[in-house]
Image 1 (cartoon, rainbow, N blue to C red):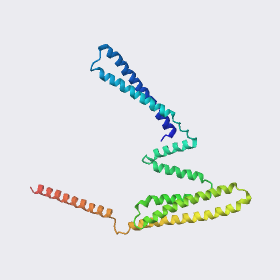
Image 2 (image 1 turned 90 degrees about the vertical axis):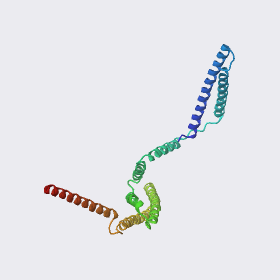
Image 3 (image 1 turned 180 degrees about the horizontal axis):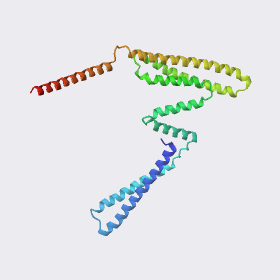
Image 4 (image 1 turned 60 degrees about the vertical axis):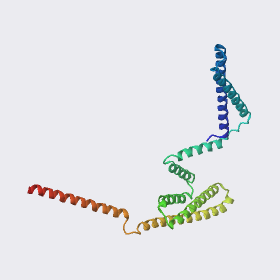
Length: 260
């Protein structure tokens, strides 16, 4: 989507082109009328030429008036490079998301970008555990129903909170590396406390994912036999019966031929 300045200038150029086009039409029809009317005298065929000349002249005047009014308006200021870059990234992201695998590709790039930002930090392994657990939960979250749905909603909220906690912990660790010596002890204590909270939260999240997987497995074992297995067995029995019937018919046909 173009910015306000680009749209304004584009619309101004369109109005100028429209005014020029109707000026050419008005000049053409007026010249034809000025030549044809004295040449053959005024008649019924001259009325359309006069109407076209007058109408095109009026439209040309209106188009030039619209152009002058818009040109008198202040032009919106240009966007700063940061805002222009953000708009370009937004347009590119929207275009990629419309592709069949665009959403997955963008998610993968976002995860890789976060991994690069956390490289070398103590929070990186914990973040990787959280990321793997969230991907695993997303693979079978759509198949969970009943009482598991509320647990999935709680897991989504918890994942967002844990990611925010990981970002906060990483920021404290980065600040700890450049802090002066007298301010390092309180920062180190805060970092250790945040790491403890993050580790316990990821442990609980992984336990929830394991419990969800166990629920999914037990839910599938609730019946003695899967319906698909029963349907396949019935189809196999039917085919065996048809094969036996065809074999008996063929045997009977051979016997009749031999007796005849």
